Length: 281
Image (cartoon, rainbow, N blue to C red):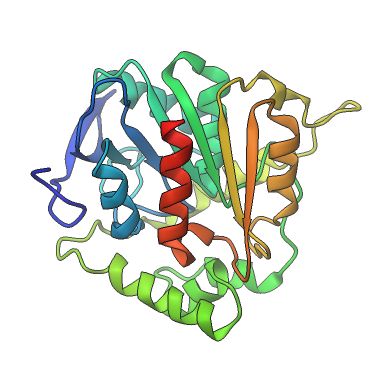
């Protein structure tokens, strides 16, 4: 593996005059498509855990992606989940890939679901982390909105929004925070325009769906799916993960204890084992 999370260069895909940023590295193995990662609200290429990305990269390629206008990507930020998903599909095809294993975290999980629904042939397996679903149950903690509006969240903001409440969870969160900042050439923060567009996309996606089965659209996702959350997600309530697992036909659900929105960052070794087992089954 010639590159790692800390050294993989930022490259760009040309899309309608815009430059969409990505990083790609890892061990390309025949029969194992790359893992394509889409991150959380306002997140960029450096909002991932090197322990996880390099762990995945030991047995397959990893691709980190910024949508239109996000962080180092250019263009007008999208304010519809469906358009964000179409840009992911465009990027997958522009990279010459027939399929990927698609991992979406938080608002990235909304996008991953829509790629599976709108462009099913591009997705082999689906991983949905700390996320919800179209018409799902919104969060009710007013402090979440306050902290999420900070232009550049600090460690304490991140701990409240993403991790459990115990001292062990705090230590795990600070360890993640240190790993996440190890790269010297960090992706720039996303703009206020990204925050506005993604907030609009999130709000529209949570509008209740009419009919007796508001989550019935999930039955069209046929890919094997791994759903993960912490026991107390203050950003996107954990019950939404149960709805995902109940309505996606071939889904399994993992709930980690004493964890919140970013259970995979609080328990990175555990999640890496679960993710690799799922991907290799």
